[in-house]
Image (cartoon, rainbow, N blue to C red; front, side, top):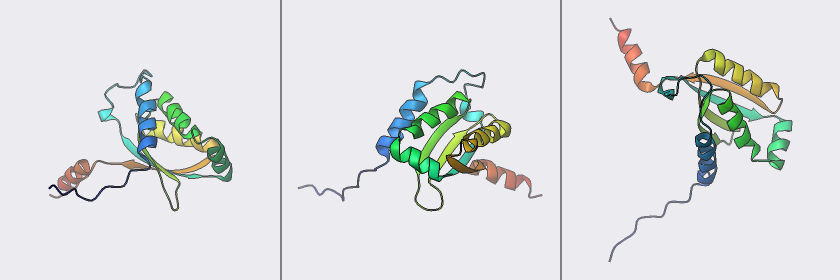
Length: 137
């Protein structure tokens, strides 16, 4: 007789994440940026829906995926996105060619009046550790 371990609850975001992944994979990135996105800087965008944005998402939740597609058309890559509970409504991990492209994207998204964003560059931990080691002389 075999004993099964405890069952893990189903991840309620898995279908959403699969939808995001299918949108990301459906469009080739042919905007003149390097196809090898490993060299692109990573950013964490925290967003808060405005009243207008909440109304829009309530009536058309698929709009989230449409916006992610628009981000891709601007030469950036949506790596992952999660809905949050708390001060922010979403966190989106984005790869962008450079700070200027990410800044432009954040301004364009915020100018629509549906979200307010805070964007932070994300440095891989290994790079951070190496930078800290270089400072120890």
